[in-house]
Length: 338
Image (cartoon, rainbow, N blue to C red):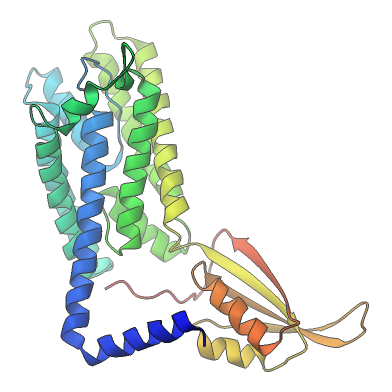
């Protein structure tokens, strides 16, 4: 066992001997990820999504925040102008309530509690960052020469999409979520055994379309072109966000490992060290004519290095191949969400 593994094992043993300290550190970890995720999303939303430089173009964010944008747009159509970010801050929390109830029942109690913390903190951060003279206005005045940096819609979309995706990914890594649609995508990813970014894109498509339609009918010119560009830019924002989520959050990414070896006890050692089953096939080397065994195992992305390490210890001459898996059907063990 190498030095890092020894230290990790000692730390694990120490924490299990001091259960109160272990539980306290876990709470601190959850709060840290929830707070960091909330701040990143609020910063991206107030700075890049909602304009503070006189622009009238608002990027539809999708999810619950996108639904809140739709509500704000409907209110503005009827002449009720409270301020988009105020509406966003209020409805972002209100609309999350039924989804949080769903999360509490079907995902996990601890997951839901810290998701609630994330949602509330997001609303607080949005209100604070979008206040007069706040961070959002400061960034809106940043120039490159005589040109305002955030005058470019593409710059706003890219930076906003990165912030949104990074926020969701940070939450998922910490076993919490940003609430809203992220609860649904997290649940689907957990049940389907696949990455969650694609679900985000599909669910948000409807929201983008509705918001763009409202933008067209609320415009005095009923500009169809504006609606088309709104859908296009919003979809681009969602794709960037989803790509960042799947790039960072590897929780649901699966890999298939194929090990060719002469050691039949390889299978017993693998399944005794990992919470997964394995399959063995008889084989014969074409060149060597030796009898061999092919072991097949599907693991999570964070487990494959451990499998390779074990395989090489059992048989230094083992031939190991690793393949990406799109989706897993059947009983694949995943650590339960608390």
